[in-house]
Length: 169
Image (cartoon, rainbow, N blue to C red; front, side, top):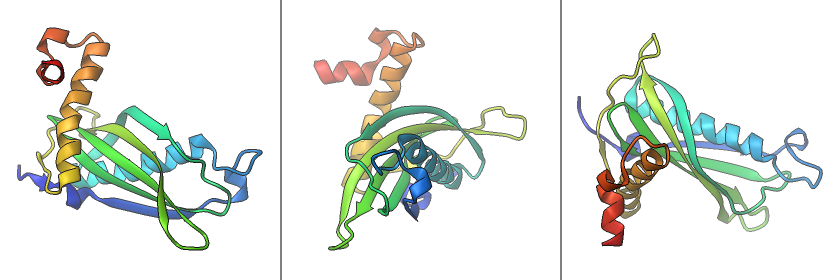
């Protein structure tokens, strides 16, 4: 299986925030943003694996800035690392300033997807090649995040989490 670059999984979705998608103070519902991020991340994981993918976990979500009614929202998703059958997808959310057109980073998230066959069984995915400085940082961080998740879930002994231990030595 040929390794693939992160760029090949890049998915960009742009949409407008409508009144039916907002809370009483006219900001985009968090759940609506999560659904949009899930769709973009799913497409990204599918592009990398060329398989059916399922959301395994939402590892991190940061709602750093509210997204007001009428905003143009751009969601950018890219696979940050591929493991055996799973892929970590990093998502950046941008809002466009109405007057200047400047894009401001509003939120980010990290999702994990698993590639499956038609019966729902996990299948191998291609390795990921990180090219840019940011891709390399996210690639390196992905293994630490995975080890932390496994330790917290009781599926890995802390002493076996070599990437995490290296941070403290």
